[in-house]
Length: 223
Image (cartoon, rainbow, N blue to C red; front, side, top):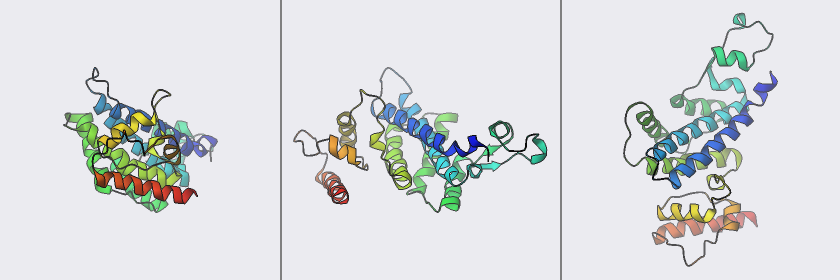
């Protein structure tokens, strides 16, 4: 196999995580002088999911992310490489990725209905009109689908992908807690952020208890 193809999965994973960081930032810290920042964040969230799912499939074999490959008769060189793929191949579409993921890895997305609904939202933004509540829908998508996916696949956490040195856990948690978003707590977040601070404005006791339960389980796991 061509060396570039062997490295494809890791490169795609890094790209997907970079897209996650940017999508998160656009959705949590919107610049109100930018008219379409939340819509761009939603598009980035959809691209994040697509790239990361393809990265996981490509870990099994890079060519599994393609639904159409060039014929050997159309290639002069002995091995298939990026040049031929860019010119003649076609990757799996967003809507078909969950089935290819399951067939190649045995992994099922946590919420396939959410994945499909967000695909419709992405298409409506990209091709037709801009719907309401884009930022809320996209944040839900990140923490209900992308977050558990990267955790199951690689032990990663969406909260750890801060967009820059100026973004802090404190700023991120303020927005997530205020919006009652269920998120996975990483070991680093548990270490750096004071969940016992009296200044936290918990939106409900039930939500606070869910966070505390996850913290307790994490501490037991680490000990």
